[in-house]
Amino acid sequence: NLQLSSSLGKLGTETAYAVALEAKALIAEGKKVYPMHIGDLNFSTPACIKDAARKALDDGKTGYCPAAGIPPLREALAKHISSTRGVSYGPNNVSVQPGGKPVIGKFLAAVLEEGDEVLYPSPGYPIYESQISYLGGKCVPYGFVDGPDGFSLDLDALEAKFSDKTKVLIFNNYANPVGYAASEEELERLARMAVAHNVWVLSDEAYWNVVYDIEAKSIASQPGMAERTVILFTCSKSWAMTGWRCGAAIGPESVIKAITKFNTNAEACTTHFVQYAAAEALSNPAAMEDCRAIVATLKERRDALVPAINAIPGWKCHMPTSTFYLFINVTEAMAKMGMGVADLEAFRQRILADTGVSFTTREHFGRTIDGESDCYIRFAYSGIDADVAVEACGVLK
Ligand code: PLP
Image (cartoon, rainbow, N blue to C red):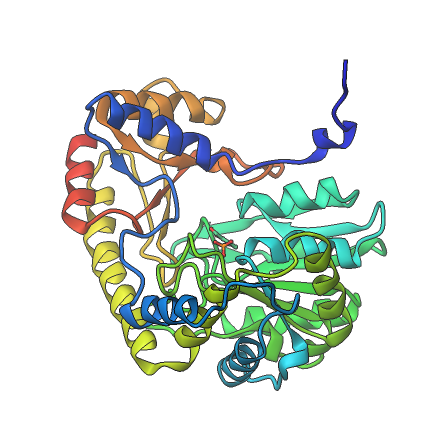
């Protein structure tokens, strides 16, 4: 009669993986599936990155290495983040991680006390909520406004959520699942709020390179922000490296040191030879060229898919300037089927069973906020070719 920890009840999960298993089961049964449920990419990792990993293996980079990361990668990251974010960082500001995801829990564990409040986007990456609640923090979600030009933040509403217990603001620019891209004014005002309320900021920049016709900007470069911001960096989405597991936390030395202490306690180090591949991604211009080619293809998919979705009766979606997600308002289509916001999961299952189109819904992205009444689903077009995605929309009509 052995018991598991009662605190497990506070740990959430990423339910998109359960949808992925359902889709896989249908494929195994021989059914046609249009996979748009997960943010994985059907591109191969650039050749120069794979070559660097092979070379590192041949060179025997297979033992333990420093918990904070190998010096060449920490240096490459410091250089890359300094030049792209406009803040000056050195290697001591970098802690290499097995992916971007671990930055969330380790950073929160490094700064939170029981009962501290954390502001985070919802709909948003579900791991924020999971880690906040697991670590004894209080979840304070903030939402987005669905306006004529896309999703934006209601900064007055967000500011009203700060209290004297607020310890952290999690900000995801560019945002999963809504495709939000911050304006300069939003960045400035958010930064002023963070300084005025003296909070830490976790700037989740997982989609930094996945922007279309806009210049990526980081909240870290706003006045007063460098000393309170930890940037989540990951190789995953930029170079089709989701399974390699390589990312980093970049920020003030004190918190970076604390984050590295969790590495020592958990995985010891990020896979040694993978770090050489990541260093290649950052320092070989050919890798950046390949990243741009991936993003150009993603843009073609977006351009093909958005009109095809808007041609489905009762479906509405914006043309986002970032990420490879579309957050689609299906309220009208669901109403015609006699369904409302409580039926999102039934809607998802019915469409998957009837058409093979596989996606996630609002329910996969954190708790809802009072007043939310529209029905949203998310399409990820990172793992599906444009013609197949457009074909899926034809099936949905
Ligand atoms: N942050 C956001 C917003 C994401 O969508 C993801 C992955 O989907 C991550 C962080 C983590 O990425 P990874 O752990 O693959 O680097």
